[in-house]
Amino acid sequence: MKTWFITGASRGFGLRIAKLALEQGDNVVATARRADAVTEALGNHERLLALPLDVTDEAQANAAVTAAVEAFGSIDVLLNNAGFGLLGAVEEASAEDVERVFRTNVFGLLNVTRAALPTMRAQRSGRILNISSIGGYRGAAGFGVYSSTKFAVEGLSEALHAELAPLGIQVTVVEPGYFRTDFLDATSLTVSGREIADYAETAGRVRRVAADLNHGQPGDPDKLAQVIVDFADAANPPVRLPLGSDTVAAIEAKHAADAEIVAKWRAISVSTDFAAADQA
Figure 1 (cartoon, helix red, strand yellow):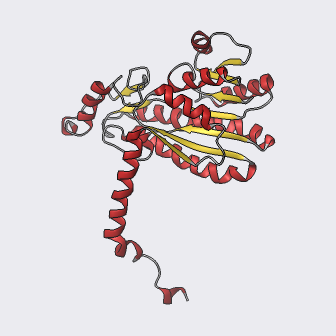
Figure 2 (tube, one colour):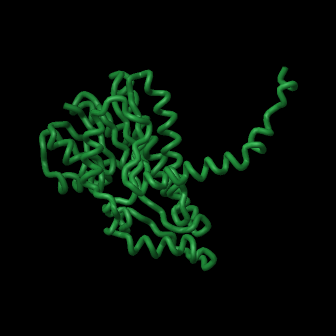
Figure 3 (cartoon, helix red, strand yellow):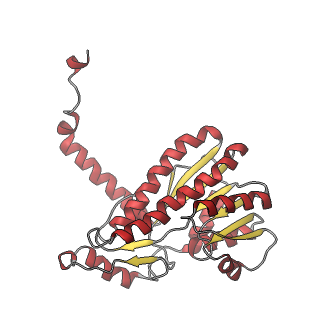
């Protein structure tokens, strides 16, 4: 029996994973801005602790972790799932929009992770799963600010992986592609209020495509949830877990493009080192 601590557990991936974890006999600390939204979705259960948590509130994150440990004695899997998207060209995004998405997607993840780590370090065990995105591996027009938050999650996860592995704590960043959840709904996606005509064929086109793609995405969220629940028991988990054929294609395309850049610009790239004689 494991104890899960899940943020953003009232809907989407978080809700599906919480439900599967309960069904397999695990304890689940399911958090959301409104705890009653969790119980409405999952019902009452002796192995379920529904807690209110705004991840941007550090004190509330600490209190939620304390309550989790008091209830179940440990935190074995931390699933940092809370987050939302921002659609629009980088220039179209207001300072308020940018700060808001960073507060949740980056600083919120840090708040919860820092709150949970003392418990995991004391246990010398645990697993942290940070939900990133296809946009955390490659930026795209229309999702520049959102992608920058997920690039931050990727960097944090890689560093945490190196820092925590000697302590028995495993870290993986999960990179879903487009899955058929409510991510493109207004509940999960903020759209920049400003539209600049010069971006009509780049970010503007993405705005139009996103509306058509909503609820027609290729990924099956129930399959993703099952993969994550099974993955929590996987031996030697990788630092990143791409999920979805679109994510795999995007990673392969970026690898090829970056290899081409290195090949073309290698002489310039390596020319900035001190000459061997200068280092003698």
